[in-house]
Every structure is written in structure tokens, then in C-alpha cells.
Image 1 (spheres, rainbow, N blue to C red):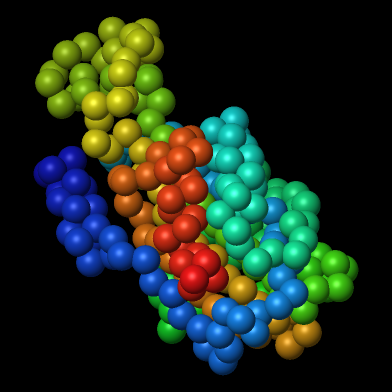
Image 2 (image 1 turned 180 degrees about the vertical axis):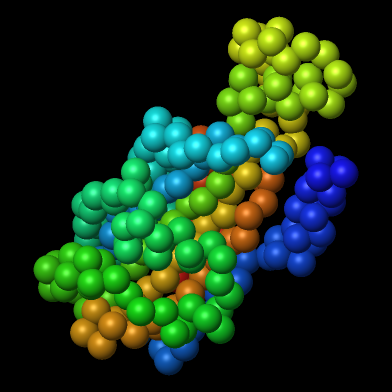
Length: 225
């Protein structure tokens, strides 16, 4: 029953959350300047259906590089991009937990967020008044898990599936899933001035540069007018 309900729950969520949201709280795009963008936070796992999820560093870092490159390519009004090391391995790390939490809130809750000290400090160090953070949260299937999932569905031997790593995910409509979430904050007052979200969707491949460029443009449309 669990395996039947899971896709239905996801599908229902997609209907209500597929549209990008954007909210200014006290300002508008033209007044948010200068902006220092902190290096994107990318947390991609190898999750498939109800299998356990594991953070995959290689996939996440590829996604991170693509995002960092395309932030400039889409013409965002960012004055500086600040390197930042997230401690992805430590699930108790305050900054990591905060960045992951952006995927679970709406525009109402975003306004009341307390910005982690580490992010405030790194932006203040640039001399910019505003800081921008970006989280990309999702998964990219790996061959082993994909084949195990299919083996369970059709009743074949899981042992055989574990050794079959040659698959084509290009025709799988759920080969990947991701969502983008972003905050702009005033580094002087530590207040959130803007929140934007492209909720989790199967539409964009986190490892495809063109897809990420489209998704970034959708997320930051208020700044690209």
C-alpha cells in the first residue's frame, strides 16, 4: 500500500505547488542593492520512492557548479559571489539545517526566519547591504536503486538488479526531482526582505545546464524584468 500511495501523494502535491512563488516584504527589486550572493547550497540524494535517501556529494557538487555559472548568465543583479563551505556531512550543523529547511516553508513563515550568524558574517564581510542564498533540494536516481525498484515492482530477483547498472533514465518521467528556494536578507538588520520558491517538480534535471538556467530564471523573474 505504501508504494501505491507515495506516487499519489507526490502527484497531488505537484498540482498545488508547481507554480513558482515570490514575496517581497518591505521593498522591491530595484531597491535591493548591492547584493552579495552566497555560494549555492545543493543537497541532492539518490532517493527512489520509499528507499532511504543518501546525500550524494559528486552529483550535488556538479549541480552546484552549474548553478554558480548560470546565476551570472541569467543577469541577476549580484555584485559579488561569496565562497562558503557548507558542512553537508553534519546533519546537526545550524546553517545546513537552515538551508534545507527553506524547502519546507511558505512565504509567511519565511519572513520570520532568523538568519544564521555564519551567513550574516560572510555577507557583512563583503561590504554589501544585502545577502542572497539559494538552496537546490532534490534527487537524481542511480542505476542500482532504479533497478531494485523495478525488480520489486515486477517481482524479479533483486540480486540480479543489483548487478545491472546499465539503464537509460531519459525516458523515466521521475528520474530526477528538485526544487529551488531562495532568501534575500538585509545584512544590517538581519531581516528577510524577499523569499522565492520553485517547489519540487520532476520538470527540471539538476544536472542539465539549460534546465537549471530556466529554473533560475523562473525563480528570480522579479529581478530580471
